[in-house]
Amino acid sequence: MSFPVSKSKMVQLRKSRSNGKFKAIRPQLTSVIDMMTVLLCYLLQSFSSEGEIVTVSKNLDLPQSTAQKTPQLTTVVTVNNDVILAEGQALARVDEVLATDDLVIPQLNDWLQVRRQTTEKLAKYSTSLKFKGDVMIVGDKRIRFRLLKKIMYTCGQQGFNNFSLAVLKKEK
Image (cartoon, rainbow, N blue to C red):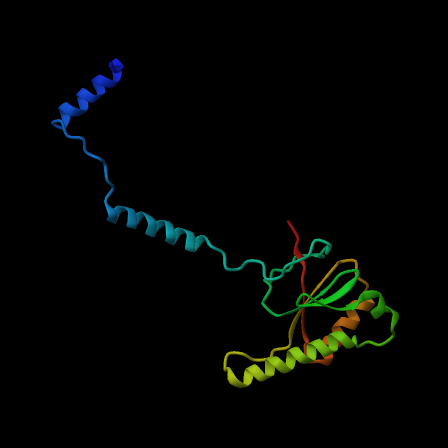
């Protein structure tokens, strides 16, 4: 069996340089650990912990704003053209809420009352947890002001007086 000329010359060169012994190249373990440490530090520093706090559904079109304040983790009330949601749980239909003249939405009022009582119970046992009355309203830009007013009034009746509205940051 014959080998190609180029391969046989390479084998002869390798054998002559290393006295007939083939050596495998092994990276040193400390170099690999140093490289991985640098890579890990880079990835940790480039990681943004200020990601999306609010998940916006596809059928919501948020209004645009030039606001610079970043969203905080609070109680979220979502309103689209069909239903009012609190933390993802459907509470009331929009057409039924708009049909009444009452400013208080009963289902939302009950949900917020339970949420407040739960937070106040937990605050008794924790020094870091405190009821602040923060609520974020995530609403479509086409919802009626009358509906928004009812939601804000209902939140205010249960002590959720610190309103913030979710908006998209306007591109400059």
